[in-house]
Length: 59
Image (tube, rainbow, N blue to C red; front, top):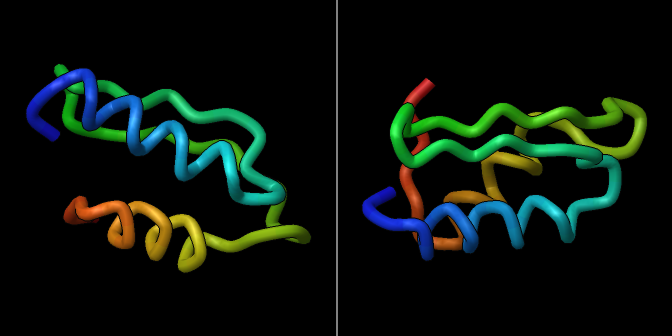
């Protein structure tokens, strides 16, 4: 992430996922903390959404 537009893009794709209830995307920390319901989505679906939006994931 390089700007607030990146943060906004990630927040937007996460908001579209059923089961993702809250996210805290931080440009300063270069991280996203995501609360989700594991009965409705999983970590792989969240990762795919972020990568699909054009961002890399480092876990």
